[in-house]
Amino acid sequence: MIVKPFKGLRPRREMVTEIAVKPYDVVDEEEVRETVAEHPYSFFRVTRPEVNFEEKVDTQSEEVLKSARKALEELMESGYMIQDEEDYLYVYRLEYKGHVQTGLVATFSVDEYVQGKIKKHELTREKKEDERAKHVYYVRAHTGPVYLTYKSDPEVNKTFEDVDGDPEYDFVFEDVRHTFYVIKDKEKISEIVKAFERIDSLYIADGHHRAAAAARARNWFKEENESHSGNEEYNFFLAVVFPHDKLKVYEYNRVVKDLRGMTDEEFLEKLSEKFEVKEAYRKPYRPERVHEFGVYLGDGKWYVLTPKTVEEKDPVRSLDVSILQDEILSPILGIGNPRTDPRIDFVPAVNGLGELVKYVDEKGWKVGFALHPTPLEAIMKIADEGKVVPPKSTWFHPKLHSGLVVHLI
Image 1 (cartoon, rainbow, N blue to C red):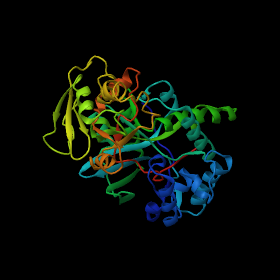
Image 2 (image 1 turned 90 degrees about the vertical axis):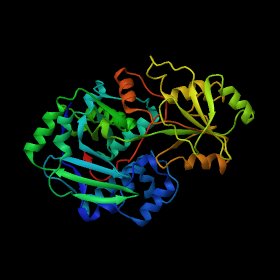
Image 3 (image 1 turned 45 degrees about the vertical axis):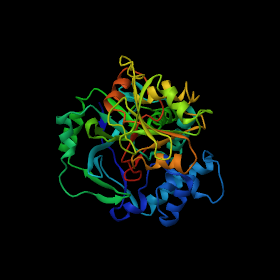
Image 4 (image 1 turned 60 degrees about the vertical axis):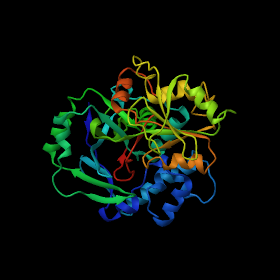
C-alpha cells in the first residue's frame, strides 16, 4: 500500500488545545458555538463553518464554504498554524481508560481507494458525500482524517509505534490523552513507507464519507488541471492508520419507542419463538459474548436472549446487528429501515449502559437492546468479500481530533 509523507499544516505547540477539536460529525451546533465562544481560534470555524454566522444559514452555500477557507487562511496568516517545510510522517497516540493505540498519520492514494485496495464496509449517502466533497474543494484541504486499519503485522507496527524523542503535542481532552509526534528523519520515513508496501489492503474503520468525498473532489480538481500528472496533492487524502488488534470497538445499542401494542409479556412470548429468553442474573446486563443480547423493559427488568439458530455461513447475516434487525426489529417491531424510522434510536456504549437505561426509564422509550461489540475481524472479512454491514454496527473510540494536522491541496 502507498503511504505518502506530506507537508502538514499544524498548530503552534502552545495553540494546540485552542485549535484542535472533535470530529465535525459527532457534535451538534450548540456545542460547536459554545466551543468557539470559549476558543475563538477553534478549528470548528473550518470544519463547521456555519458557526461563522450568527443567523441560520445554508451550510452548503458558497458563502458558508468560502468562510471555512477564510478561517483556515486566518489561522495561517496569524501564525497560529504553520506548514512544515518538508514532507514528514506523523504518529498519533490515543489513550483512554488504560487502552492505548498508536497510529501512523500520512496521506493515502485515492486511486487505491477507487480500486478497492482501501476497503469499505458501509454504504455512503450521495448527499453527504457531495457535502464533504464541496468542503474539500472550497477549503482546498483535507481537514479531518479518515480512520484506517490493517491486519496487524508486527514488523510493520514497530516501524512507527516505537517513537523516539519528545512529542510535539501532549494533552488530555475529555478523558482521552492525545500524543502527537513528528517524524522528520528521512531514513525512518523511508523505512515506514517501505514497510507498508508489504500490506495488501487497508480498511476504513470510520470516515467512509470522507474517503468517498476525497475521490469525488479529486475528479473536480483533475478537470480543472490541464497538466494533471497523478502526483498532485489532491490525489491523496489524509488518514490515520492503526493495526487492527490495537483498536477498541464498542457496541452500538438500540432503543425502540413502542412495542406495537404488545404487553411486555406478549413481547417476550414473541421473542421466545426464535430466542432462548431468560431473566438476567445481573443488572444492567451487558452481553458477554457474540450472539447474546440484553433486553431492557424498564423498572430494572433485564432479560438475556440467545438465538436458537444462527446462519454462520453468511458473514453479514450472522452479525448480531443483523440478527437483531432480521429477527426482532423488522418482523416483530415493524422497523424495516432503521436509517429512517423515527421509532428507533442508536446509543453508543462507550460510557456503559446508563444512557440506554435513561432512554427507557426517563425519556419514555419502551425497550432497549444491548449488544456485544462487533468483532473487527468480522468487519474486515465482510469488506474483503465486497459486502456491507448494517448501519450503526460499530462505534470506534477514542475519536481522532481534527486540526492537529491538515493536508493542504
